[in-house]
Length: 421
Length: 92
Image 1 (cartoon, rainbow over the protein chains, first blue to last red):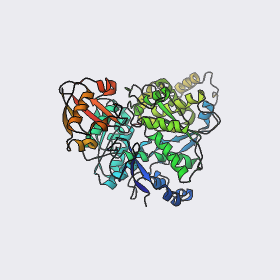
Image 2: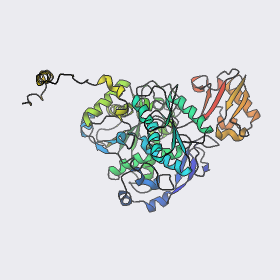
Image 3: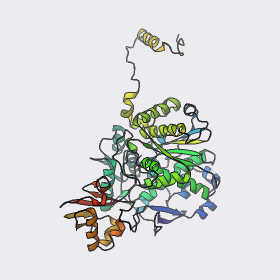
């Protein structure tokens, strides 16, 4: 049974029936899925959710599908990790990582939104799915389309990391690389979407796609024992996930799964080479001027974020803030996370860590309250970004004496010596 | 100046269903006025009451966002191609 009531324009509130529509005909505002929260409150319970499989569909009353889910049966329910060593390094008492770098099947937060969008595409009867992507979304759409037996076209900007290109191509979609930035890809896809009868997950299916991002918030709350973290930090690219975390937390309060007055401040993380949202936030305006991206954090290099305005609204309403960090700080963030927690993230995750550090140092996030950092993507897809900052392997002959000499060399001044023998 | 304008689905009810129309004007602003002459009602969907492009609409001249040019004062020349595109999500 579904509790979906329809679509509604976020701006002028005009209502629409459930259909593959994403913008209001009157004002171009984005359309949002509306639910019967009274009905959900009566139907849902912590126990009911706990009895279900460990995937994102365990929150299905708050997701916009009518039939049984078709894909994503192993997506979501990623680990929430108590990060003691990283917490110590950052000087905070209670730090957690929500680790979507191990999301199934394509290792990023995108498996959430795509699970919902492609289930909806099948309900609408589409045979071809598509997306405009900075890489991770294309990976996820390609994989889910393959598992559902759908045709697939993915559009990416030229010059992406090899892991992101191969990570789509292996599933057999038509991959089209556009000469330009993601913003050029987006513009083209909007026009292609108008012409071809395809399910563009982030264009005509955007209202459904975006709802999938709420499951990141639902899981954080459930994994904390149905409590909200006092603070949560997440990256902003086009600006989908942050406002949806805010919506997810609000819905949990609304349907009684967490306390009605539980506060949670939300913080936006961007790369200094592409931070139109943080620039606007710091200027005190909600008008997000587009920029030309120039950063190693390709997955969040979106100069014209569609939902930037809503990111700023959600940040302000929650009492949060935001920061941007340089490419060097992003690399330091990747290394710090790897060396303290054994998690290898891509530059978007390095941005999330580095921004968290900066906000703690600035006193924006207090050191004695609970903090969750969202890790939205996986470092194994972007190895060339960090290739120059790691220690290369020592190459030696297969002779014990040679290793002994190397070991002596490496052990000089190190406390871990004299264990051998 | 005569330019080609690509019309997104939500605005096609003003253009009798056409996905592309011709318009004239020395600037984006003048072109939008001309568009309104021939397709009454279309302009207020693109611009707000203060004459600014609406928050969720992007206008491109030959693929360049007019916010990187001179906004609605951007000059047009014969044969330019204009796109009116709703903002869309993505990334990460």
